[in-house]
Length: 224
Image 1: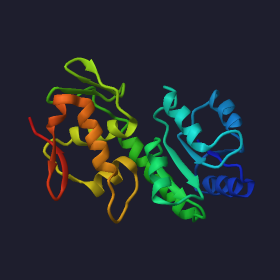
Image 2: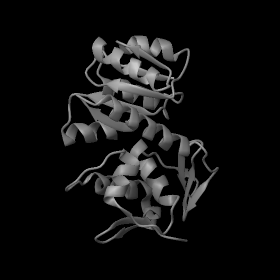
Image 3: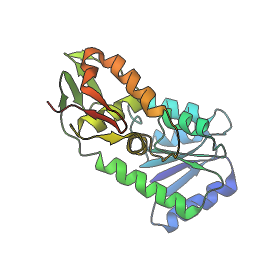
Image 4: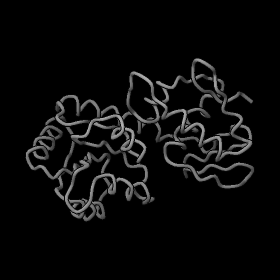
């Protein structure tokens, strides 16, 4: 089941129709309160979320979803007329899995949905524990510990750490990390990855030294 929270009835109806025609179950909602009422009954496989909404904006809705253990891992694609880099980064840093600017093509949207579902499905079979030096990651609980002390990370910091830790010794370019963790491509100068690596190292303390900068390429976690 895919839910769409979109106050524009014409867009909502078209997307729901297209999803059903493509073999998905789908249900649309005009207001966040309606969505929440339905999510008390069932959690969808994915949520299409407009940003400009009555009652509250989509980023507030997304933040509440990410803070709720029942929906913290729910795949979310933002739908919005805003398409600047700042808006894109803001939405993705808030926890969205992808970002589609209006007007969008229906076939492109369906393709994006399938890509996000494949990505999240591939992560569903998680190992019990990932070790990287003094860092221990518990994927099933989304927990990180350093020398048995809990480390509080944002969703993007956590995804970034897991991506590197699952592939010790492998060098990831900034573009690849941007795509894997934030779910979008960007051609040009972008400091998002660098900023998140810096804060991640700070939170990990001395254990963060295991994240190496490969000059001219990107980042890797040192093989132990």
